[in-house]
Length: 168
Length: 286
Image 1 (cartoon, rainbow over the protein chains, first blue to last red):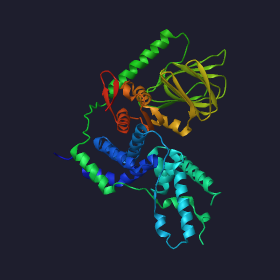
Image 2: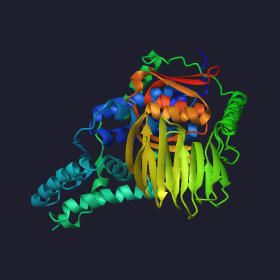
Image 3: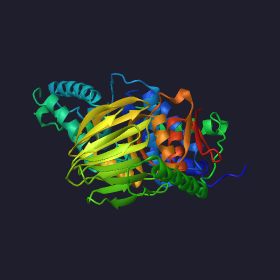
Image 4: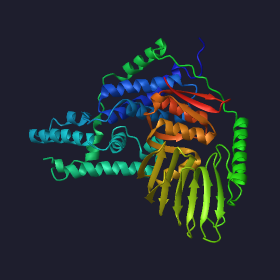
């Protein structure tokens, strides 16, 4: 069968560029990596089914939109328990046992506090910190202003700092 | 000795990594297998290109019907009808210097009451009003009205079943279904099939973006969105009852009907079909 211009090569390129962002975003929403990977598969399948109709320039916002709606329409909101891998843990061998213990406790409390942030605050904050997405990039992909993104991320930091400043 | 007090929460979070069950390569292989095996076969969608001649004729017919109604059914002397065609947006200045920006497929007519000083506008469709201060300014539409003195607000009133008012300057009194609601700056209210939602928060920029064809929604039911899309382009919408409780969130570019329907169909996993003869959009569950 003759392959169209938007064949598997095109699709692989799109997947390589965007998969991590979409999978991570779904993880930030759901707190369940298995679920996030399942929905990410469905999101890309949806794109494949409609590949001839989509505009290459707006694929990333479209993928985020599909991901968000697929998640919201199929899963009820629940209490999140985000569990990240902390790369910092590998580099603390030379620290005192007391410090290592405190750091680990802090890490657990921080991950719990992030899980409890409001949805938009949490996802924008994590996209900025973990996925290195600039405010402008987040704003473009979610169809909102840079100021709105800035506001959400500042809110997240304010909530987190508020929870830790008296205890550290 | 290091102290946790020196830790910056933002920087600490930078060292977080999202866990994974599948590596990226494994995820691609799985996806590739699904594509090749056609686990999810593409449903054939009949897509019909929008015939703009028919759309224009329908709009013209709607205008004529509206004008006839004004000429014979309404004794008040409103100004001649001002109408924007499908996908157009135009700005008009009313005699009192109030500004009206009419969105796609929308109409207004104006009446100034010399005795009471009251300013009356009738609207069908979407319009943004920036009202000059003065006597009462009343925007009437089928199913309700908005009463203000001097303020800025957006009215969406294509049909009595689907009404929305967003206020982003001053305050307004909205009457929906014979009930009065007071809206302050940054608040909106919506009525769909008799059910009132709000007041809810609204951002001026988001509201103004509608004039450029961009609509931002947060968990709005699919039938509401589909109906608005239909009205903007002069189509009826028929929606599968199983989709009544499906909600859409996100920004939609509604400058082209096909593009808007495509995004919604992909995001919501639904099928659409446009019947050009009946000027009807059908939305069905997959």
